[in-house]
Image 1 (cartoon, one colour):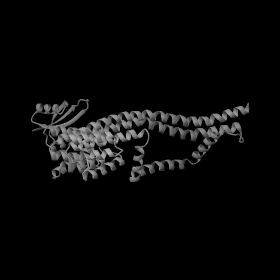
Image 2: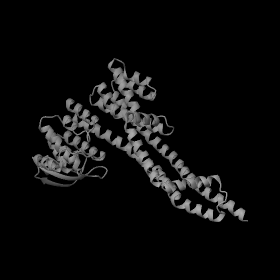
Image 3: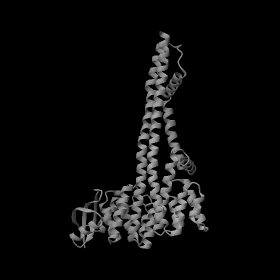
Image 4: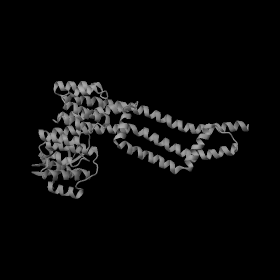
Length: 412
């Protein structure tokens, strides 16, 4: 067998690099085409697994950095294709480690290879790197190893990761404009308070004299400006301390519970929060069920992937009741934080023995609903932020124009 390194493109014209072992070039080209790729270049490679592992070890060993979700999706898809094509697991891992452009992922894969050669299972070796491979990933790989369907499980994982990444990306993109407006509003407010209003206050005092009667709104804005100007360091400390304190509070169990409760009850926001949690639960649960994981383990693992403490507690409570003999669909139907369609579809899945297939459809439905809800939320937030920004500027303008008009009348 000869080792070949290749450069190819996929259906989306993304450049993909990799390596494989084949008897000759024609077999290598056929194998690349089987992966759904179009080869650009193909070269014989003299590197072997041991050399790859040595490079990985000097590149970082047990890396503690983060791996981008896009890199992990590509790794998972390529590994699935190679394992499905009959490439031995260690050879596939060595090949992918050599050609990934993520140094952290290379180091992690190198350590995984070492773990497998030391006698660990693939899942156990992945589990040592929880910062890269979460519990869902590890549990699905373990189920795939046990059932002998690792390539199929890796495909499911890649799809799930792509869906999660897509939802996160859409929410981030929808929030960029409102957040930008908020930052501009805050900067504009403090800029006016620090540099514009004090000068206008002096001008008004020069025109009207010390005994000039100014409107209440003008006096209020001048007082705020004076406080910020003379105590700017206190304002900065309060703002930074408040933001830092809030972030730390949300990280606590009480703070997380409070914030998640607010999210699923806040008008406008709750629609997105609920639908996103349901989409995550149903897709993760269906993926684990399809991998042959037990219902109790599915509930335990998927509860941690939902992203909302209230749903996590509900699923953990459901696991206890399922263990006592109750049907999951009946438990979900009784819990008001779950839409009725989830319990109904679960009941259909339990009756037909196709829970994983049914829940995939539920996940697809709610992911589409999340897209619509995010678009609607963005269309609501943007005008609200514009109104707030305009109101702040208008308030300052009114505090300036009213006394000028009053003083002008007095002079006349």
